[in-house]
Amino acid sequence: MTKLPNCPKCNSEFTYHDGVQLVCPECAHEWNEGDSAESNEDTLVVKDANGNLLADGDTITVIKDLKVKGSSDVVKVGTKVKNIRLVEGDHDIDCKISGIGAMKLKSEFVKKA
Image 1 (cartoon, one colour):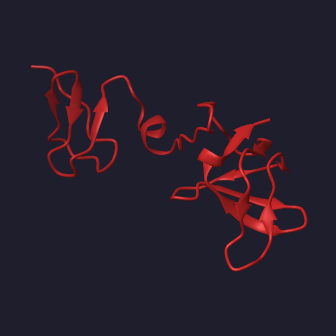
Image 2 (cartoon, rainbow, N blue to C red):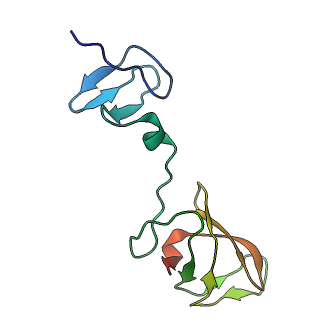
């Protein structure tokens, strides 16, 4: 019997095969045998409105007028935003927009420039 690798999340030795995936019964983490722990856990996947992958430092363009909460300001269609930072959560882009300041945007309202 071959020794299965320890869980990359909790390092448990009680992993088992479930179809093509490996499963940890202690933390319920699932992964493919060829995947590394870093590529599975640390990679944040954020896509724009067209399905293009976004990365930290990208330049994006706003595709819809966006009202700024708590203000009468509006981020207009076509506004370019440089040097974005991806974060986890509902609003998955942190950025600074000239004339407005620091903002959080949803990736569904932007496209990669």
